[in-house]
Image (cartoon, rainbow, N blue to C red; front, side, top):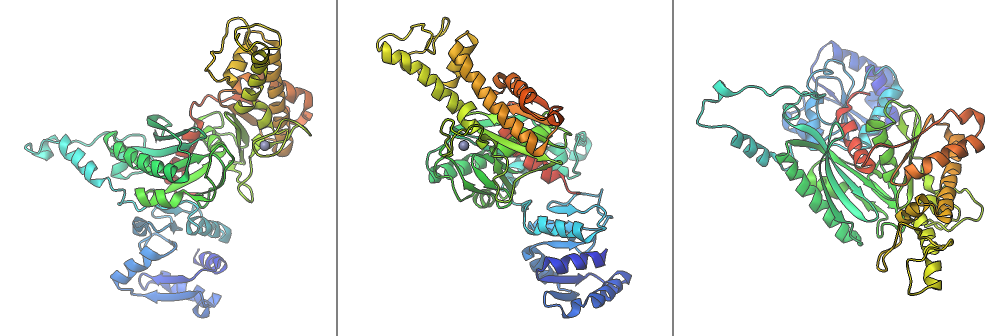
Length: 505
Ligand SMILES: [Zn+2]
């Protein structure tokens, strides 16, 4: 294994220090292999033994990554927030260390190299585990719960061990949870989400319009919720953020957003939040988060390849292919709302025409509802409750003068038998259906999950369009409506919960 590790480190091409913990058969073997590989004279390598303790601490605290087997501080180094790769087998099953990835069966150079890329690149960010700032409230809470006059040994009994993966005492006493943030066009929400997908507590504020106000509010809410988590007996393992726009999930940076969220391009979210909370931070876009939520908590559980489409104000999407989320070469994969289904359709917020978002999103339906409604206002400026064939309103509904016309009014009119409204909703469903057909022909998933408030109004038309327009071989696909109420928050939480408990891969 040492030979494979050296090969991987040579091709990884970073400055490497080789530590010999003691002189035994293992280190003799290391010397033999290093001589064989010419590592002694390699400019990237230095070998040392008997490093003084304080120097050792300095070294491991500032290293980009540590790789090795179970001795030589592999478990302890993670406490400094340094990413660690354990290649040995002796530690597996014993107390799990924070920030440590265990490589199961490190039997190929590629496996080891992949682990190096993941950890060194901090694709999965590390936490400084003793620095979340909430130790004092935790200790005080514990002290309040016991009677210091009573001899502790007589009364103390261990709490029952819950269904937990980690063996850390903290994790047994508290519910392992994530701080989930959802940044939408209208609202900014922060929630505590448990390992089972339960939303323990949720806080909502209006999403501020400027970058400065928004980042300030995010930090304020996160810090408050993280300290509130102590009272709720929740151990926050990290922060997951779902946001509109294109996101470099590796760096935790929002690359570019549409007009739905202003001043939200080239924004590093990971650094300020991780610095303020001393927790690892993951960021991805709302469509990808919805797919992650379906994979962990919804219809996508155990499904190898599926696609999710969320119809809200806009239309987002996420693709899980062979169990992995697809980000694409410039983090723009799964922008399914901008699949074009007409050469000259309605204008989209992205600047193009005929995107499915321009037909089937909440904004698109609202636009059409206003068009129908405006006909009446134009002809009868002082009367609103007029039932005419080319109007939005039908018997059983009304829109007050000051009330904004929305997609919900259009849906209501269609249900009450307004043929024009019905036709618009049907056309929207057909556009979405054609988009789905294009997806089926591109990646051939076994499942399509429609989520968001409009999904249930579209699902039947989407199935019809698949029957009419898709190739025979892809018609086995299942199309279902999501049963998750909070896909963005749950997806944001799943990034945290999955990684922080997934130590072996
Ligand atoms: Zn578009």
